[in-house]
Image 1 (cartoon, rainbow, N blue to C red):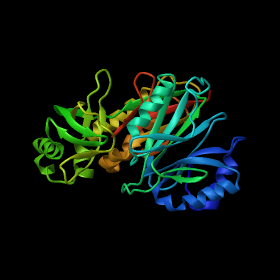
Image 2: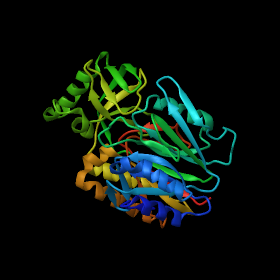
Image 3: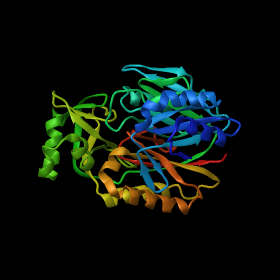
Image 4: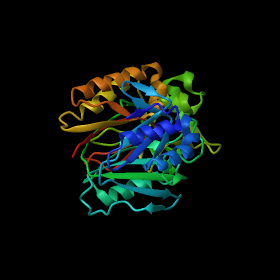
Length: 367
């Protein structure tokens, strides 16, 4: 359900009116309303609503992107909400996730602060808990300008460097596509630390990345890394048997390192990639088409990378309309979701990943 959110009290009233017996909601809030959150949480509390969620650069409603409003997902009966704090070298659950042997839960929505450390540690721990039994969809939260401020919230307030796992007793059908193609490489990540690539092929990663981009397009060589270089030539981690995992370069440090949006392990094999509007739009359609055959669908939630949105520009509406038409052939539900700073998915055939520059479509079933 999409809410315009022109008035805090009105938004809380609309949520209350649309609530079932559970009165629990997952809220995806456009970042222009970030300052409203404390007042919105207080209004929801007055209406007896239990809300949680995250702040995003933008939202998706029907065939359009939105930079305002709220996408609200009612939580199914029996859902369990867990909150984690991500430290540099540790992960602490403030409220516990379901036990690994609790088979009531078939899927989850997983939101994580895109600027938090140890996101890969979170992915590994959640996958270790549930393996391929539980399917996951989710997104990295944050502001469009990457300001360092909390973006995950529960009814208690905003939480710094946090992650939210909403486990649900519902099946989930997933499609994951990105539309990018390798154009140079392979390169060995000879040194890295978390989301900082220090060396590629035993050379300083910043200069190496710029030179590789310059070989493909000399006009881009000295442009800003984000959004100019990364929107056209991201990096990707090689994956055999499935699509490569994209990594979004954000900036080059004074030490000539490349900071990307998600962790990259040392000794990973990477490539320079390229995509165009046509390939990205086709990928969004294919992600939805990969969900064909899903029955008894209650809603569709999509996580579309914000840097894809920047690259597509006015063509974002074509991407979303193409995906919407593909969805119409599968289920009579609307296309809703977020413009994400990192996309999260696991469909039982691969480990839980924090993707970049990717389109993830999830169809949540009624049972």
